[in-house]
Image (cartoon, rainbow, N blue to C red; front, side, top):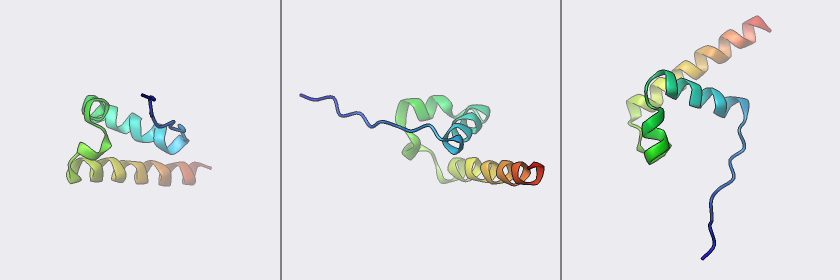
Length: 61
């Protein structure tokens, strides 16, 4: 049987997402169960922090 793992392209946005998940203490949950197992509150927090960082990044550019 073939091993059908998805190849993930690590974009700047995805790396930021992993970094924030780690800062919030959610990285182990993501590694074990995947992004789909996070609660709406957890994903909302990650998305909110990503938005804040993107805005700060755009202001500094």
